[in-house]
Image 1: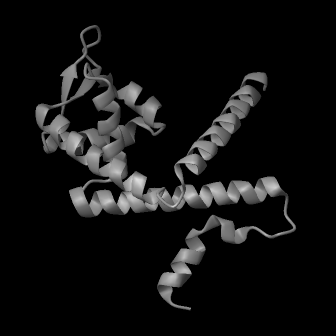
Image 2: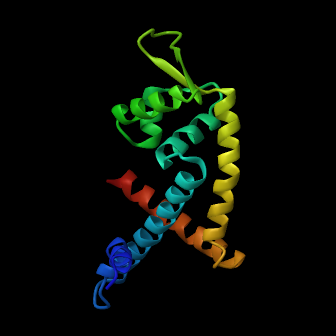
Amino acid sequence: MSSVLTLQVNADHEFRAHADQHASLRLWLRLLSCTTRVEDKIRQKLRESFDITLPRFDLMAQLEKHPDGLTMGELSRRMMVTGGNITTIVDQLEKEKLVAREVGLHDRRSFTVKLTKAGRDAFTHMAVAHEAWVAELFEGLSKNQQSQLYTLLGTMKKNLQNQEETS
C-alpha cells in the first residue's frame, strides 16, 4: 500500500466502523470523517493560497463579525481554545499588521483586538475564496440534498442542546 493511501485510510475515521456496530456509531464516524476531510482541504487551500493557518483565519473571521473588537478572553471562548493559543495567533497577526490591540477602557490590563484596514481587506479576499472552496466541496450534493442535510443536522443540534439543558 502506498504511503498516500495509508495516510488516507488512517485519516478516515469511518474506516474504524464495522457493519455490526450500532448505526449511531457508524453515523458519528461518517460525520467525523466528512468533517475532517473538509477541514483538511480548507487548511490546505488557505496555506497554499494565502500562507495562513485555519486558526488565524478563524480568529480574523471572529473579528470581522465584531468591528468594535473582542477581548482576548472573548476570542478564547468563541474559538474554544486557550488564552495562550489566542495570544500566539494575535501576536503573529499583529506583526503582519492585520490586527491591532487596544488597551481596555475599563481595565488597563485587558486588550481589545480589532482588524486593521489591511486585515479587513485581506480577510475579505480570503473569505471570498473560502466560500468558493466550501461550495466546491459540497457540489457533489444537489441543492435539495444540501437542504435536507442542513435540516437533519439542525434537528440533531437541537436534540444535543436539549440533552445538555436536561443534564
